[in-house]
Image (cartoon, rainbow, N blue to C red; front, side):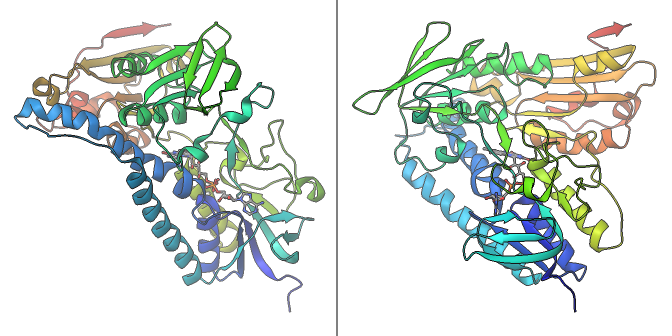
Length: 458
Ligand code: FAD
């Protein structure tokens, strides 16, 4: 008889934790999992999925306008926020059910409880103060939105968590932050009809993405009516008797709003988790320090996903969880590969990116050819919309290898998923050139860009 109640106990029923639990159980391990909120985690409950549903909703306003150029007359339009939230909630509840059923079918024991670490093999379940012992513990507790505790009036702001459940749709919204969540929500609020402002401390939105796309997106967002204020931050927020908010900024602006949403980054969910009692090492921002195999400094404890602050995306958390379970319980050692990860920003227009940005390519390579195409997508020739698409490819001129591709325009996320395969395989510019175009598409530009727009040499 084993000294342990479980071979594996997982803390956190989100993307990484659920995948690890199911795969480990499939390998014959006795697995328990604790989730303090809802199974599915951030992505399913208050992240990627509800966000994308809101993005779809917000695009209809432009679709109705564009239809006129194609001969359609669209009658009176009315948007009902409550109906959208209800429909979204039903879909999220369905997905949560799928997550629960999958865990049940795999034979994983579920606990609806907050769980804390007591020592390197013991987990305390707060729902009934039970203690369970596991040979291996996986921490997959994700991350939580940052707010600014020092900001006067900071208690009046919402984060993405609350944005999914607002009782009324706000007429005026200010989103603070310049990362992908801020940019996406600015597009959502604007498309659904709110007067929208984005305020960001940095020089340009979307730090870490390719500079050409950052400025092109900034321009397109402004063309759609979003006020984008860079290089400024809130210094105070006041709430009036009627519930409206007034945010004052360092540059002297006074921004009135019904809601102010902070999307200024996320921090690992490790506060009060008991990591200190088990001796688990953390970095300065509270992330759990792990090696490529997701091992912590304590041999019985592993961590995957956002709590490790490596690449904070759902598919990455899932793959890390899968690799952990195969390695520890399936006799098959492998590690998630964090290189060349394609990713999308569901901004409007959408952004998709894989590989190096121009700045990164220039820093690591002597000779780079840059291919750029900025054009009006075919649909807008009749819709009359001025929005432009941008495609950019970076090629190592010495080896012909494609180092990065960046897309701003319709379905950019779908496009870079497939481009990611080519780049992961080490595609060269000659491979792109040898591929027949699909006509008429916007993506055909990628295989017909003959001459570099720019040549960078050391
Ligand atoms: P999570 O999915 O966050 O799961 C952690 C779980 O642990 C949570 O359910 C939490 O309730 C639970 N938990 C925490 N502490 C405890 C405890 N002590 N005891 C028990 N349970 C606990 N990624 C993409 O790839 N694409 C996107 O489009 C995208 N959009 C996003 C939009 C938003 C608004 C946000 C916030 C995130 C988005 N992400 C997106 C990021 C993505 O959601 C995360 O990278 C992913 O969910 C990380 O998975 P995880 O398993 O590490 O953590």
